[in-house]
Image (cartoon, rainbow, N blue to C red; front, side, top):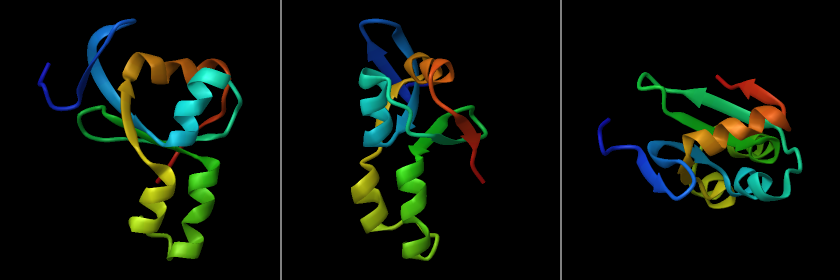
Length: 95
């Protein structure tokens, strides 16, 4: 496993990272569904954001920019923790 995109966590050890918006990070704790929009790159790395982040895109020309990134505040998390969303939230493949 390459060190790029790897996180070390107490619960799962050293694993591949997933990249989530701040709202989805909160969902890992409070278990409140927010809708999960995700993409997977060629290395099977996941980036995901909530429906709230998705709804910000039209007002910003459907482009990610400083404003949308400031709202999302994407952070790396454990890929195994990301997989917990399948138990309580709706996963959607984004374009």
